[in-house]
Amino acid sequence: MKLQVIIATTVYVLIAYNIYSQENLFFLKATPVDDPYLYSNEISAALLKYNKDSMKLDEVINLATYENRVKDIRYYYENKRIIITKESKKKYEENLYIISTDKFDSLIYQPIICPTSFVYTGFKVIQEEGKPFLCLKCFNNNMEKFEILKGQSFVDLDEKEFTENDYKRIILSGTAYFIERSDYQNVYTESTNGNIRIPVVRNINERPIFPLVLPDSLQLRKKEMLQIIINNKNQFVLYLNSNKYNNQINTSNFIIYDYNKKTWYKQQIKGNYPSINSYGRWLAGEVYNYTGIDYNTNKVSPGKEERKKLNSQNPFNAEHRFAYFHLYSYGILYLYNTYSQTYIEWNTGQGDSEILLVENDIVYYRINDEIYAATIQGEQLKKPKLLIKDLQVLDIHWAFISKK
Image (cartoon, rainbow, N blue to C red; front, side, top):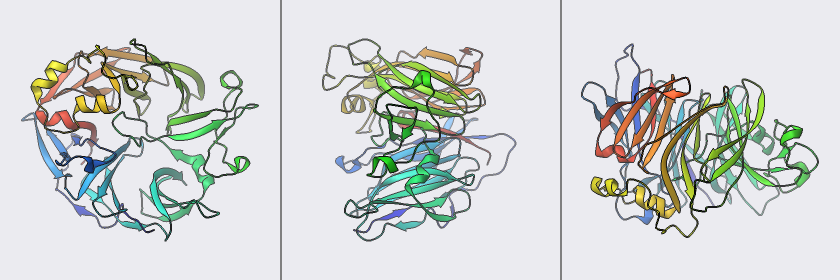
């Protein structure tokens, strides 16, 4: 079986920008759906530039097409790349687009084909010789070598084939509640030591051992499948478990390693459904509880009446996402500095709230149709500034600052 996946070849300029001394703020408007063709209506998707003089959003490029719908988006902040997966109406075809957030002026792509009888099952990002490679996973369960990785460098488009051992240098960006294929890696702990094995081959003894070894104080002393949800030059975050939903704000447990400080510790964070992304030394996320099939309780996520008034045209809007994933959103946002172990949280009073970006000690976040920026000062935020109020903001979930 052959699958064409598009990622990066011919570079074409979408729009020309003058180089100014100030940086430019961009927003990505899109709501990924694992099966985007469940909906007859097109789900809007676009790259937008913030115009600070008019406090409006200028469209850079429209990403929404009926024949090629957004399925998945991952933001690799440390590598300054956003990878967008779009599903084609053509059988077995997906298209991967790469945005360079450092000096944005183009979208890049190139066809890559899995070998005959292999099926494309997704991608991972792997660090090799100081460069991040986008690695396509091609799977065939009937062969001795049941998975191959075809990789291409973000930096210079070098190509190479990877092996299961290369998973030891995997880069992981974090999780988000509305993406079913969030960026994580399953691993197994061992009962007699602190090794973490990556299950990418059948033979247990041949599975690669992750370079970090859990210290004695944090070892589970049993074999258990866990998830690495973040791994970059700043942090390693291992998700342990969550408390069950009981109509209270539950918690999730994590093991964290700070690469800069070379420190291990265990951390508990509010919410039993982790939604965490990494921005430099900051982890940022939202507090959600997974309610299981019993979503329709008497407990209503704050701000439901406000959301009704906004009348989002997106068929997969916040209310539908909460119900689809069986989540209760508290409207609580948080920042956690893994180096200083500083924790900051604030309650927006609105369930449809999320952090879009943390950069230069400024956090950008969305509340319904409004985007705010606030400076991080010590263990608190300074008074936030409203950047924009626009119905398009309802579908914005990412932001980045470009030098171009």
